[in-house]
Length: 540
Image 1 (cartoon, rainbow, N blue to C red):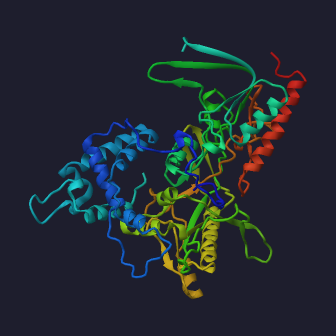
Image 2 (cartoon, rainbow, N blue to C red):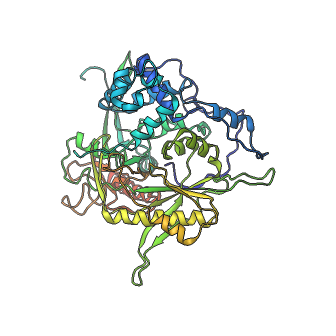
Image 3 (cartoon, rainbow, N blue to C red):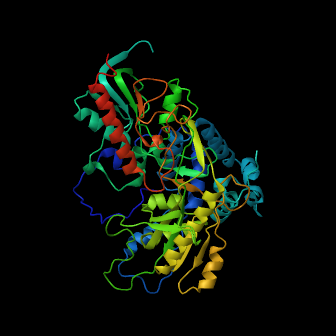
């Protein structure tokens, strides 16, 4: 899920030059290491996901549509160059080595007849010679059926040299909501501040609307980050945890000697940094809150007025409101969930929307501008842990699941009330219903089927993936070391002069976007650090 909210109107200026790393374009060389047979299998899978299909008959085409673009989209195939190569490159850069071994093994097996028989079963057979085929030789319809079958699978339980030293007053690891504020406050107080950031530096005019290169550069792990069990997809901004630049020709290690160190790597990266630095407080890495999110969508009717805006679902001001879903009891007005608009570009939408068939996903993508996405978010009582980079575990609280279900049902009601002709969830089976003119009783009957099933490793055919764009609490502050990882000023109990200044400080989930809360907390903590340094603390 991209940043929640509604996009203001975007105007394209063809003479504007975005930053090269955010502008896309084809690579001159690929380093994924896939063999030609593996790429062939991957191309066959990609084509089954996004197949070329006939243009649907439409006796009354909308005059506002660019018909040539629509024709091209329907005829496009996921196997066209450079799509398979780009998918392979993305996986090679973002997947762990153990996962890549399995991916390459599966693709290698699919390039053979016996391997295809093993993985695809009777669908690999034909009534004519040679009777048995490799995956890429299967008819497109059979490949699509294989993918549909796979999507319903049930899972059982089961340095000494070359060191450059830099002296400064404060070193800050990370430049997000916490680190950025801390850097500004401490620099304005007259301190020499160094900020370590593994992401690139961009100014507003550098940004483009291309999601692929932008996700690669602006999000942790390129936006491909999930919990160990696969239930959550997590969006976190790029933040720094290293100070070593390596290439094939040179390695430089930078050692920063500072009076004060501030960790602002965020709730997913500050705990691994603290643990790898030798800190042992039992709260480090625990109490991770994610603000779990489930999504709903609504397809709105086409405009019949020539020249009218045809369902620009993100046209207008930024997010101007949120909807609270409260308890209905007489003695309680507790907020169970909040509902907001989820602003997702076409690539993000396509990656999260449930794949039922190639024809279905193309139909929905052609209608993308008329699809509104809402999400239900809960202030989670459940929590998780992260002590090793990239390995995130999370335990759901049953009340959180029920609150999400209540919020998701309300989001669907809102979409129907707003005039959607079809609504649905992001469950893997494409759960949806035609809603134009629907009776209240029929809608409520559909809503009774809405649940909060687990991720793709759940035991059962139906599953969904939860999303998270807010991470908090994994290095919480406390009154003493038995209650938190750091004190109320953000300083470590174990190492003098080591501070935490990001969302991991928050003791609980807060139930709304935490950006302003993190900035305010960072402002107060960095003011205290500056005051302490003025009084001679942390001197050489």
